[in-house]
Length: 597
Ligand SMILES: Nc1ncnc2c1ncn2[C@@H]1O[C@H](COP(=O)(O)OP(=O)(O)OP(=O)(O)O)[C@@H](O)[C@H]1O
Image (cartoon, rainbow, N blue to C red; front, side):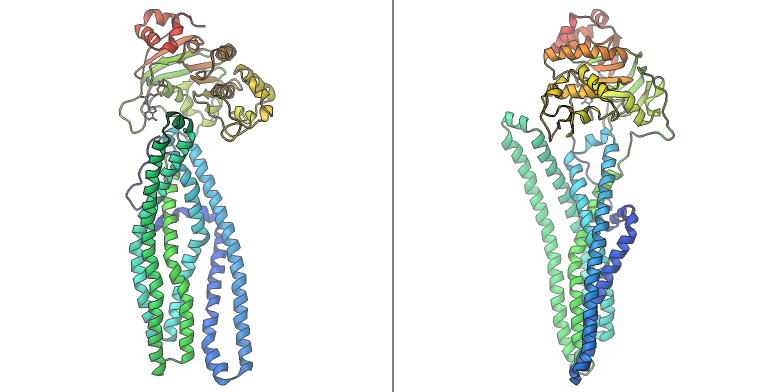
């Protein structure tokens, strides 16, 4: 796997990236509006007590009229109760909408990852994808479920309270607003710096996740080579770098907090001095000053929270950008507009017509002008030196990659003119690396054909010589794969083969699927496989003599070109390069003595 592409140095991570969330938030706009309204009303209800202070101080308290106190206190209590009810409503609506948005985002991301071409996945490390699908989605949920609402509500509270302060005593009110201005200027400047740091931290977390994943997956190799120390060293260097990046982020945040903490204290001192002078000169009553200070304390939380709310918004914007990189990635292998199912026989005729292929971003093409026709029911073995392009050629049939020149056809239809659904139903592929999922044996085998009946499954298992599954603790219902029962390499290959031959596909593509079998099992699988190959069209990558002998004809691939096609015996007799290949590859050498089937 290559390094994850670096983000472009454009507008990335600016708060405008948050607008990407709108399509996900739109279905829940009513709940979001309810959240926002409840939060705003609760904040405004908080203002009731400070606003009631001057009438209480200057009325009942100054006059010693206890009876007049009661209705005012009752009013304050009512506002308190309203605030509590609004708090509950806000939390409920906020959590429901944010959890829904999180789920929708996760689903969209997962579906996109499933649809993105193989070439895309080869360019991205799994840790980067994992961190986007988990921690970035959670960051967005936290912002949607908290930061976004309070950023707006607190801003409105600041404006309303600012206006009230000016209304109570305009010189003091304006002074409070003037001391708040640096917060805005500083906040805007800091936004850029914090954003860059957030993004770097998030990317480094992805790198670290990749390392952990590789170390776990490759644990046997690492242990057997005795390189745990080396692998740990690499991991530790990244962990140290992550710590440094996080510390940088913390430093920036600490600076912000400093300012946001310092500001209210200085402002409060200024209000006390200015207020005392105003009361002395008769420009302000004592009650109004107490009310002014009480209102200013309401302003403290919105001002203090601005720092971390902006930080949360920044992190969410970075997360949106990172997720956007996946959601915007081009779906290069997709259904052409207007495609509809075409008649494809079983077995089908497979043709490579002047096919060329170049991996994206690479120089020389891997395949150049390949012509190969495989008649219905015929088996052709693809033979060539390592790196000659055999696996790449087979991957073009099921459109794991799309040709960059020429075309591949099934019964005369360009594979790009078939709906992907149909194509992948009629073409079955078994890879050299047998991948099994954390599911039951049955689910693993029927993955490509969920409707397959018991008889078909049994037949596929028989062909693949995978009868061992009946001896597993729960037979076909035994859970296998990463989190299930461990199987040997040969057993895994046999199950992957059973998956490919299930339902007798129109075209069978086998990429050296017998490589992990012992000689005895291989002979049994080959015998059964001959039955299947007799009824289907097959393209088989052969690294071993025994696999070559399964084929009717052999195609020799050299440097991305097919240089000879014919029965094994004929090539052996007439093509020196083929003879050389057989003699230089011990695995293939045995074919020298045999003949094609
Ligand atoms: N994702 C990729 N990006 C760029 N180049 C690639 C990619 N995958 C394979 N290649 C290159 O394409 C060439 C053909 O690879 P391919 O796997 O098709 O060869 P092969 O004949 O199947 O080899 P082997 O017998 O070792 O399996 C090689 O040079 C390989 O390095």
